[in-house]
Image (cartoon, rainbow, N blue to C red; front, side):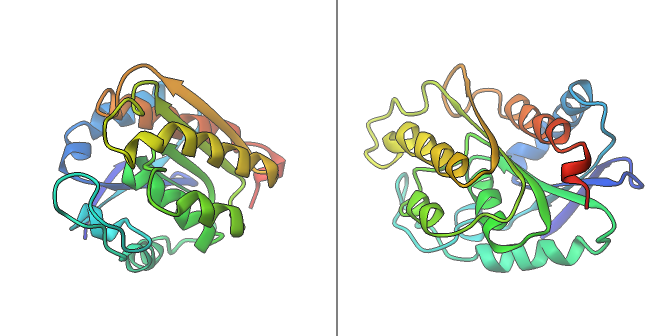
Length: 215
């Protein structure tokens, strides 16, 4: 698990983002866009996962595209991330794109460390996930959700449920008192991932400032 660091190392707010090579190719633009949309200083720690489908999946599930099944190594990934979050005097948020967004939401059910979750186009079609959300309690203060307005327009029967699922997730979070928003972006899943992720983190940074979110 390789670690990449961006921003002010002494900032009191730390953003954690699981990434792959594609994310890293646009990460500097993402950092720039976050800075343009918030006055909050931050330190971004990117965690490059070894196996996207395995390391970010909370439980096993059959492949929905290609032939690579989903693993169940999210807990191990979270444990490794928590090891680098060793300064508990700082505020931590977690977020990411696609399956990393799903993982970030799941992580907030399994630790109280993260104050906010920035889930851009999260893979909420993942089998059983909204059911998991319904029967468990999230432990963060705020969750940003977004989706492209064409992401559900696919012949894949599992992935085509994403619109319904993200609406369901949003309702679950609101019903349990989480500070949340669902933003619809233009286009499909592979459009403007860096911009969408930056918007997600900026919303979290702006939303979680103030007394009610202090440590």
